Image 1: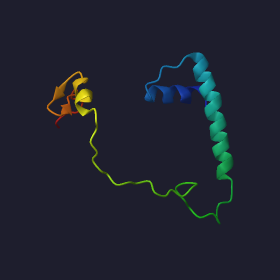
Image 2: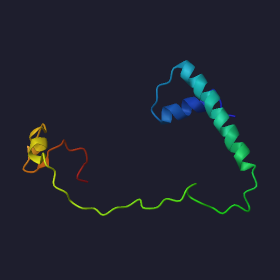
Image 3: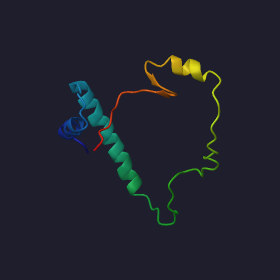
Image 4: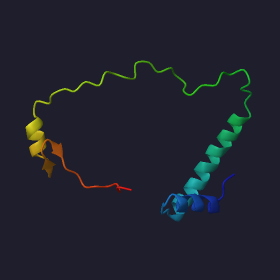
Length: 96
């Protein structure tokens, strides 16, 4: 269902270096996955109501309340760099 060249192309796009053994392993595994998905697509789901998850999720939010941390100064003092009451970390995003 998926061949070695397709696995190599996906690995290249994902910037993965695969050994020949890994390429073969992924070819086999991905083929199995695609065969399973193909089996699922053959199922009659006409009477099944669409959903986004198998189980309903309740109470996933909580109040966002600031709490004091007892060892705050000790924690800030252990940081490699600090600026007043904040950790100072290297910049990773551009301004633009």
